[in-house]
Amino acid sequence: MAWEHFAHGADIGVRGIGATQAEAFEQAALALTAVVADPAGIAAQVGVDLCCEAPDIELLFADWLNAVIYAMATRDMLFSRFELRIDGHALTATAWGERVDRERHQPVVEVKGATYTALSVAQDAGGAWVAQCVVDV
Image (cartoon, rainbow, N blue to C red; front, side, top):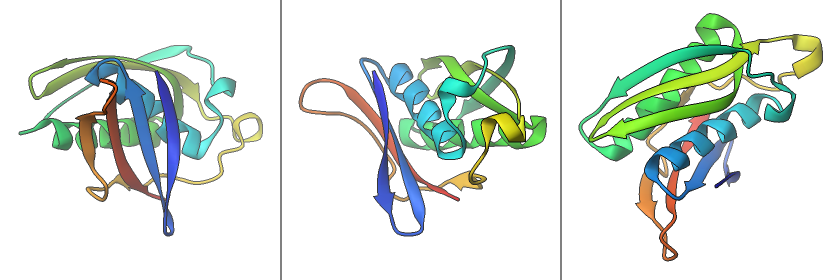
């Protein structure tokens, strides 16, 4: 499992890689967190349940990231651990994190939302699942 960023003009791409779609979604959520602050400095103290549903797996991925962004904004939290289950085109998850401490976490940007730019959920040549899109910062 892994996550990474990729360049895209004024915004930034997030990519999650895993053995399953769920692992790729989890890793992409970590990449999303890493746009804002270092996930290693975020304690997994409080669990927040999230769910979403969409007509296909790619839209589900965008909805998933937007659910994480919404939870971050409305709860004033950052997340460092995710556990999710995908059942068809529905997703249930728990995100663990803590309230933002501006001095300790030093957030650098606010993510406004996941976009459909470079949106993809597919297996690579080696069989790993890759979930990615550009997020608006």
